[in-house]
Amino acid sequence: MISFSKRVDELTNHFFKYRWERMLFKWAVFLFLVLIPIADELIGAVQFDYLCGRYAIVTPREGLRPDRSYVAIYSPAESISQAIVPMHLLRYVAADSVDRAPLFEANRIDAEGGWLIRLIGISETNGPLLFNGSCDSNEERIRFSSKHNLKYIRTE
Image (cartoon, rainbow, N blue to C red):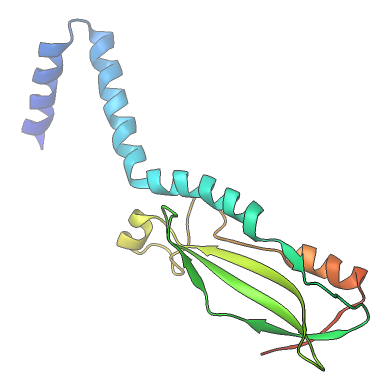
């Protein structure tokens, strides 16, 4: 390890004339090496915020009738293929408890950590360290349900 650092010193002395240039270069390399393992989570956080704003909403269905009770029907999670960290979209349909007519749809997005988190295994849930790995429209769904007087019964 000592020979490696000596070799780095020799190379930086060869390419950079002044001491401050050598120090600046070494700090830049250090920061680069620190940020590489978490770069996918940094980019994934921006994508996650965008996808949450786009998909984690409540969408009413046509012919929504107030004063109903509903059951929650979850579809299997869909993988979001264009995300830099693995993300999954879980669709939730609220169906009328009597005739099973859809009343509204809500979504939830779950993200996993970047490659460093999955490789090392330091997170029990494989969740990201730099951002909250789940967003849903729960608060909006509750407001929507109370506004239209919809009562939740069970999940199927």
